[in-house]
Amino acid sequence: MPAILENDRFRIEISVAGYEFQDDFRDIYDANWLIFQVVLQSVHGAWRWQVEDAGALTWEVADCVAWLRALSAGEVISTESWGFSEPDVSFDVIQQDGDVVGLTVNLMDEFQPPTKVLMPRENNVVSLRFHTPPDVLTRFANRLEANLKRFPQRGERPEVEKQ
Image 1 (cartoon, rainbow, N blue to C red):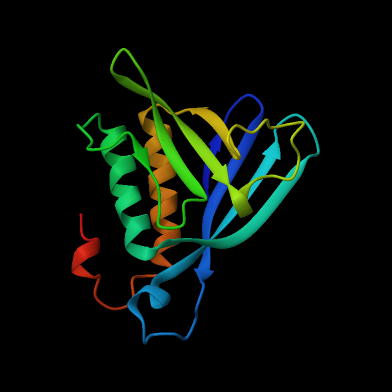
Image 2: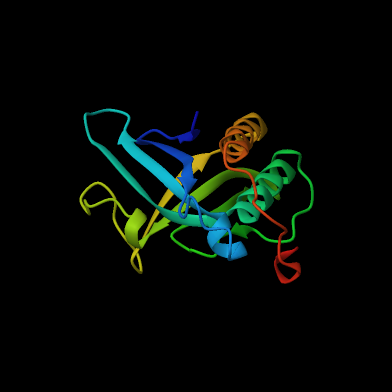
């Protein structure tokens, strides 16, 4: 089941569709590249768009899940943005009076929807804002983690990548 966020205009689903390189275990990075599937649709109409492309390394998704959980628990976080090695999908925290109230999902390059009418771009980035109270963030993190469990880390994480 995908990780889902919804606002008054759009519903976005982000899931891990598989490894980019199914049988490549020689290189730790190639062995752990994941393909993201992003589905974006209008909540008031028939418009729907879907794309799959390389998105992140297994350990980056695991770290993102931990970051989302820290946000949902109100813990102090080290960064208000989360991105991956492939920067086409990223998240920014929306705060109000010091509290996390939402996430902005940024889509670049291959993950940008083809229409500029529904979604204006700024600096070649589509940014969608979602209200994310703690229960929504927790559910989003849990579903992202459930997706990741289907495609676990293969081999040891390189030391330079540990955070």
